Image 1 (cartoon, rainbow, N blue to C red):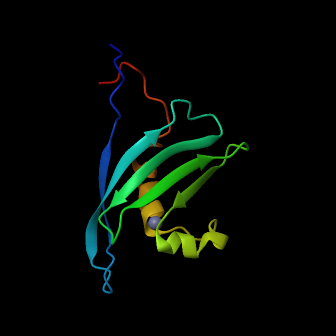
Image 2: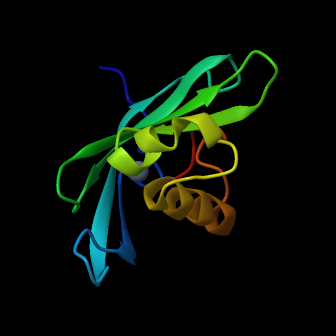
Image 3: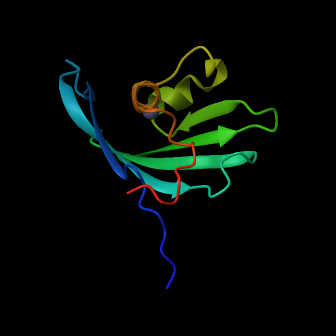
Amino acid sequence: MILTPKPSFALITLILPGPDRKRTLSPYHFRITYRNPEPADPGCVMTWDVLGGRETYQIALERTPGGEHVWHCSCPDAIYREQDRLAHRCKHVRGLMSLCETIGTPVRRLPATAA
Ligand SMILES: [Zn+2]
């Protein structure tokens, strides 16, 4: 039997402006669906499902060969603004990024002994 270290967080809830016209604050749930065991390698680092909006969206964090992180989100806001992706990020990605600033980047590898 192989023991895998438990992810530090598997489901995150953030309060973000909701999908209605008034943008009423509502809870969004971010569920990790994929985590690259080699986060330093170029390619997809992590993916999340975003629940709580009109639909379920997918967020992906991509690492370029140059070592930069590029965020993708499948929501209409992110797709509509795809061209100025570097200048604009949708609320889901912004929320996730602010969370990473608070608790540290989720791509950092945890010691296997972490409880
Ligand atoms: Zn989004």
